Length: 223
Image (tube, rainbow, N blue to C red):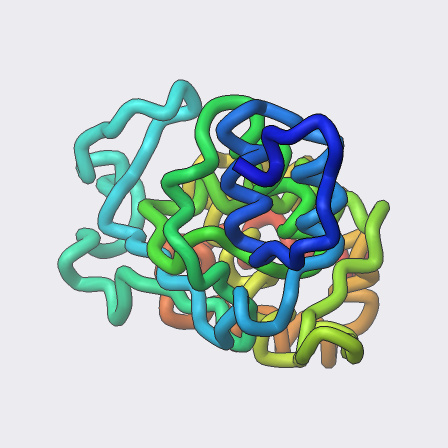
């Protein structure tokens, strides 16, 4: 009611209530302003969980796990079919207030500060697409991790290693060696054998990632 009044009063409003009001009315300019002012109580420390049992085609439709038939073992024999991105921030309140185009813009804006609306993801497609829109994959944005309202720190090593592993897995699953090559260049990876071994170790639990490394990544650094 207060927000609907033409003359604004000096009454203090809860941040989440004001956000809900502007989201429902598709006032992106105000939503954007509020996301920049997100208080610490709206965030919680958490991890992203990726379920790699879900294999999707480039069109986004589920496909049978027989796609793994070209690799040395079946998906059931893999050491792990899940990946985790540690040390990120999760939006505490229900993300259901966001929908359609305003949700897409909000997710992109928050991802630039490594804040996510949800913890669980099916496969790598959605997360990689979100990171691409946020500028992380191309290196256009110096993505930072929010520790609290006033302080930021560079992404922690565990977070970066997890992202590298996810991106290698994604490029291997969808056979994208050229995209992986660009990613390695933007993030200055595999410039020497030490960094190559570190990236190999991060992907060792994924059999087809190791195969992908053998045929596509190792020749890059060896050359």
